[in-house]
Length: 215
Image (cartoon, rainbow, N blue to C red; front, side):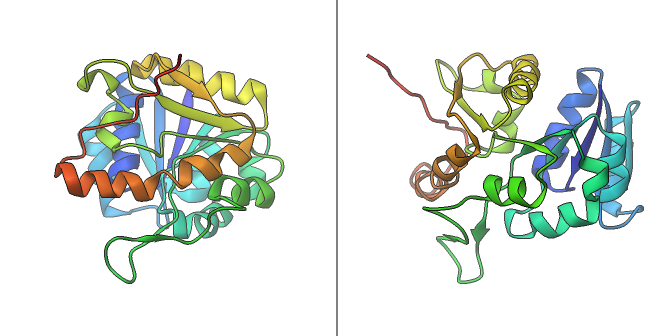
């Protein structure tokens, strides 16, 4: 599959590398066509990896991943272009964390709205699926690095889009996928980040995840 990655940070790098390893053709998009981080990733990832602008990656991909910082996601997606994303599945991995006042960060949107919902409203003809935002990027692409049962959450308005995303996540090694319903479910996953950050501080490690025990 051709997949567009929007964002050149650790999350985009990790997901893009995993997708290339799985045999997908992946273009990493950024604000400029010759972004140094994107070009370095192409060199490291090898065959199947390419780079371009946000618009290039959005046009190229059959499926897209928003791996930009949540506070900048809407602007980045505007640069990607509505027409380039029309009818496509967009996996939103962003978190609206505001570090401007130091640690711990606050959320720029919560309670009655979420980043996933904001994206879906702004791009109604794109099929937004929220997932993978409740964990470290290394765990996103290698769930087997933690022992035992732990989970990844998925939500979105389009059932077929969620199926496509969950099928792809299973190739990453995910077994325990929890469907939280429509895109408003991303309010809950967004608001899991403050407790995640507190646990990171307590554990002094990012190597942990949520496990849901059901009776």
